[in-house]
Image (cartoon, rainbow, N blue to C red; front, side, top):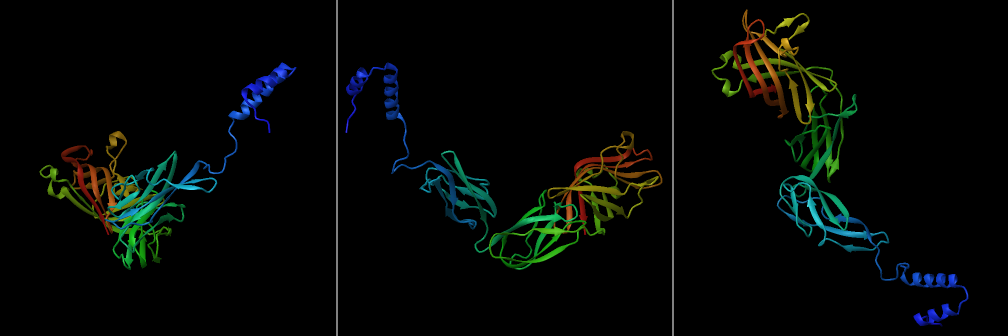
Length: 357
């Protein structure tokens, strides 16, 4: 076998008759010595993904170890737990150390993630008492094919009886700490109440479809002026109680009030409220102006032959287990026939507003 040394290369080129060919041979030989060939035995290919693993549940107050394994396309892997950067999507629920040791604090769920060499791996971790699980899903309106926000989900029988939650703006819900055979009740204003028996032996999903009832539901509406209104309004105007018929029309909640002598103008009676669900909140706009501005109030109740009680503003309430409770940010006023506040009024962001079955 011939061993090429620099002197041998120079001598060989000097003996060749074609200078251009000599340069070509030299470049080819030098390039062959500098290029990178195939991966040799013992070399490891670069990782293509990061796999995070560990318990899917951790009870509050306890800790668990998680690992981050860098996996390559050729199937080889290495443990990157100690060198990865760890993160919890909600540190109030669960925290994680730089070596993947996680500690649970309160009931909930998080996305636990690790990052290493430009790769990221994530897994869901649920914090619930030992031996219990998470039941989650979506409540949907069959007619509209859309999520029902603000729906109430209650466990009415089984190990977690009394547990309640409400759906978010997309109709999604999560119940933490359920197990075994339970019965849930799903209800929302304007829909038929749905009950279903469920067996929960692991974290699982359950979607529920609701149908509109087509019937109105009877509530009682109480509006109570804020404490700072004492002395600014007569006692009769500080607390008003009405009957309220609630009906759902597509995405709207329509409320018709009774129990008062409401102003009628042509075909319009000022006893109507219209609300919409925004996440778990029900929002009513009782307008904020007067006829002079093309924005009449929603509630106008006659108090005497020449005066009216006018209620305007914005209401935000939440389902509190059979009732919607919140505040009215607006004005309660006693007006004359022109509906201009002239006798008494009180503006506050803290008027009480309660719809109770």
